[in-house]
Image: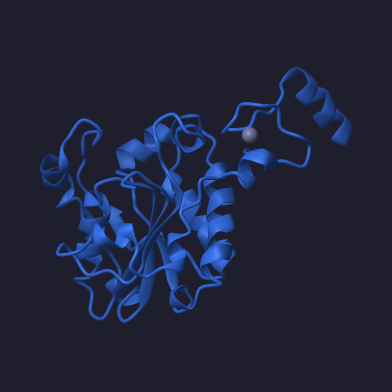
Length: 229
Ligand SMILES: [Zn+2]
């Protein structure tokens, strides 16, 4: 099997999703050098960090953090592109697990009971074949040793792409798209909402608002990357 893999990689080398160099046998999706140089925010170490301030005066959240800082043309943009548009969903799981392992060392994250991915609209998920946030959630769940729930937060309306809209238009676009099913599963629980990118926070805010309609629920938000830094 190893020989076949070696031969295959000779003709079809697996490439690092960040730098594009050929991966070594023991590397998965992202090469070791890129993993060691990820632009990590380390925001999980501070309660009052810049990402948390995005939610000030909008909706109460417990903790907010992102693994990496996203800038145009940096490795993070390439990693996210591979995760979302090239079918490389395993990237979400690998980075989610890596981040989960860091989060669980912080006391403020230790009381979290469930990981909840931000859902995609079913039509969009069918077209893409997977929800990248669900793969991030699976990784976080593994890294933190807590279950992931995919049937609680659901998306009901289709939304256009957010990229060309300003903050208000984005808010109009997402504020009514989420619904909560089986609220009993999360009532009086602390849940971790996860997504790929945090930009204006509009999507996360809409999801947090919906979740907070459930009695006694507390919500923290984590993403793989954040742009507002
Ligand atoms: Zn690399």
